[in-house]
Length: 484
Image 1 (cartoon, rainbow, N blue to C red):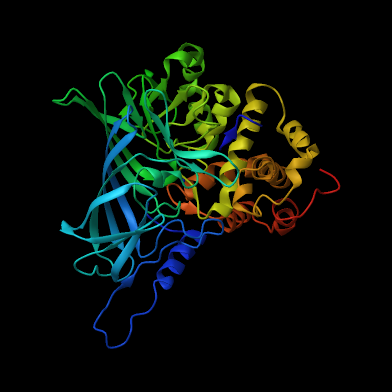
Image 2: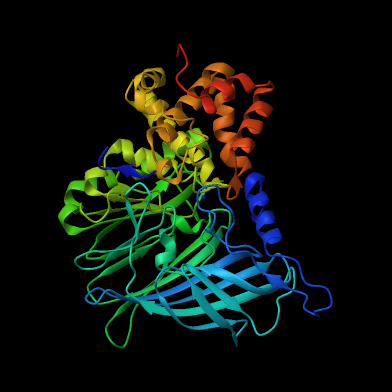
C-alpha cells in the first residue's frame, strides 16, 4: 500500500508466465546461416502500465548487493552480483538501471561489453549463454542516485535525508540504486551488504547476519532475505535509528522453536529515527501480537523475519509494505496502517501480482484486513466499512481490476472497491468458505506470482460454483450498482 499522507517455489503462474513468454518471443529470430545461435533478451516485459520495466530471456535467482554510502556527498558506490538462469539462448540481455554510472560488468567472471540507453543497461557477454544455463553477472557502479517522480506525483527510489537515506521502490524506484530485472514477475532471494559511516544504522530486508567495523572506521551490516522478493519490495534505511528487537510466537514460522509453547518464534526488529522513537515505541511493540492474529486468519506468516521502520515526516509521503520490514513516515504510523502493511506480507509480498494491473490483489486484501481487524477487535462489522466505502463516489471511478493508466494504480477504487469485492464474495459464499479462501489463497500461491484470473478461478474452485455474476458487477463493472 502506498498510504498517502494527503488523503510480491520458483514457479511462474498465470499472467506472470505469459509476460515472460512474450518477452522471450520479443527477442527476435536468429537469421538463417549466420552461425549465431543466441538472440538478445527482450528489453521490457510488456507490462500493461510499464511496458519497458523488467527484461526477458532470463530468470533471476539471487541478488547480492554491496553498497557503500556517503551521506555528506550523497554518493553511492555499489556492486551487484546477479545469479540467473537463461530462458533462451542469449547473445545479450538487459538490466534496468536509472542514472548511475557503470564502470565494469562481467558475466561468469569475464568482462562483458555494456552500453546504456535511458534506463536500459545492455550487456553482451564474451560467450553466448545457452538456454537453461545458470550464469552470474557482476556490475560495478557509482553516482548520486536521483529519485523518480511517479505519474501520480509521488516520489520513490533512493531518497536522501539529513543524515542518511531511505530507499523504496514501488513501482519503479529500485532501479535507482541497483541494476536488475525490476518487474514483480521476477522474484529472487537477496543478500544486502551496507557500509556507512560510524554512528549510523543501516537497515534492510530480512535477517541481520553480520555487523562489523572496517579498518577505516565505517560500519558494515549484512542482511539476508531468503524468501523470494520482488525488487520493488527491497528497502534500505540509513540514519541515526533507534532499534528494538522482540520475538513473535503463534505465527507458525521462523527459525527457532519456542521451548515454552512448542510453536515457532519469529525475530521482530523495528527501528525509528530518534525524534519519533519514543512516540512510536508502543505501537511498534504491538507488531508481534498483530502478526499472530493475522497468522490465525491468513495462515502461517510467510517470512523468516518481521518488523518496521519509522522515519521522520518529510522524507516519504506514504507507507510502504517493504518485505519483512514495512516503512512508515511518522504521520502514517497508526494501528490501521500498520495492520494494512503487515497484511501485505501475505497479500502482495508472498503472493505477488503477475502484472501491475493485478495490484488490487495487494491493496484490496490489505484494506479488507483492516476491516477484519476492526470487526474482530474493535466491534465494527465489516459490513459497516463496506457501506461507508459504497457511499463514496471516488471509489467508483473505475473497476479495481482495470485502472485506466499508471497514474491511477494507487487510486481509491484499487483499495476500497477491491475490499468491497472481497466482502461481496464473503456474503455470497458464506463465512466458512470465505475463511477457507482467505487462508488457502496465500497458501496455494506462497512465494509466487498470481493474476486476477488466478484468484477468480481459485475462489470458484473453493466455493464450488460459478461466480461470474459477482465478478462482472463488482470486479469489472463500470459504475456503482443500484444497491449494495
